[in-house]
Image (cartoon, rainbow, N blue to C red; front, side, top):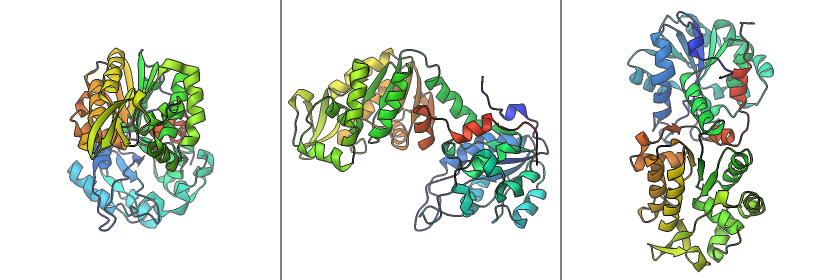
Length: 410
């Protein structure tokens, strides 16, 4: 049973509800225009729509980039996009907790939505604090007295103990929004009590994350197998003693990944055949795909993908699974010559009857490209928060919700 409350636990009609969402979107650095409304749409069509329909006076808190970064901008555009999606008036105020913002909140009527200025326009927002410390800041002290309920719907930012993520929970009744609730339920299904056999597919280039996740899920008996691909697969194979060739080993060294080899070797020594590495690779030879078995290593050519025999082996293991987590492609999937590994493994996951969870930008992009979105049980839009959750780390935003006050103290 969840330790946190949800929207089902509160009557929000005519109540002022502060909602922390994750509107952080892709921005054109030159025009400062939002180029993807995926995250805005996700919050709009679930939590924000529900609050408006139930007659709440909804106040939206969100961030966009960081000060000094090319994607830092106000939330005026986000409010306009939100209005188009919801097809109802959405107000915006270019103030966060000053008199303008407070006046706009007091003017809200039942069913209306107000978007406040980018929370990162206030410098203290990005300092990590405990809920009690954060509750004493100007942001919380000014906004909390005007509100009846705090809703955290920003799972993608839950790995940060930022003021707007944790501070309100110390002084206001708090609930998980629908996206936060959905993410936590799906991740718990994959991590806390997964149906067995449980298979983790770790690809991409973030081998340090893959090592930490593998250690956690194998060490705690969560995963039965970890299948490796991409740069991660190359590094795991190198840890088993394979010489990939001068160029490929130099590439790993340049990416500062070779320092992980002792840790990977210890993992393989401990868990043996549960850690599965590629048995063949696709190389780039004169711009074309050429496959070789690992017993033909080292090679002078660049490794670009797992080979077809590895796809067959991984697909057989995936077919036995009852739960699957996938993060990262199997190779340079953006190049049509070298997308066969990613496509083959992802299709095997999509065709499986197992509960499947996918996360990470490149993973989602590949799933969409191959038309597999509807065949994956759950796709997480979170990045860092997802990785830290899979490592077994406590997320400050989630812990704050679990420990939230039940009565208003301000």
